[in-house]
Length: 151
Image (cartoon, rainbow, N blue to C red):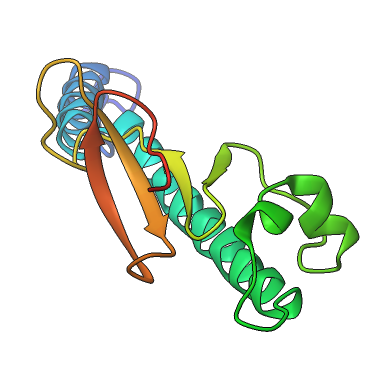
């Protein structure tokens, strides 16, 4: 046999078709994983975690302010229900956005709106709030048709 006429092909590596099939399968798997983890919901849950932390921080500041301004038989939450009063009094360095306060003198509530669907199973027209109440000294998720108020 002549060296010029006998050409031997040594097949090493993958064909273009094989590579395209593998890339397509990986793409399908990636899209299934993205649908399964639902990144938009995870972002909302992370934001809710921030709201819970902010509400707890403001609640601690309000209680510190209430104790610090107490005279005689007790304090007044009306002296501690404003972002300016809490920051100027040194109870907070910066008042977090998305947190609200309502007070009635003897009691106060601090609350923030939750966004994630997993936060609570609220009915139609209800909004999930993370609420701290000075009356109970506890925080909880509440489904309400209007913003929480101090009683």
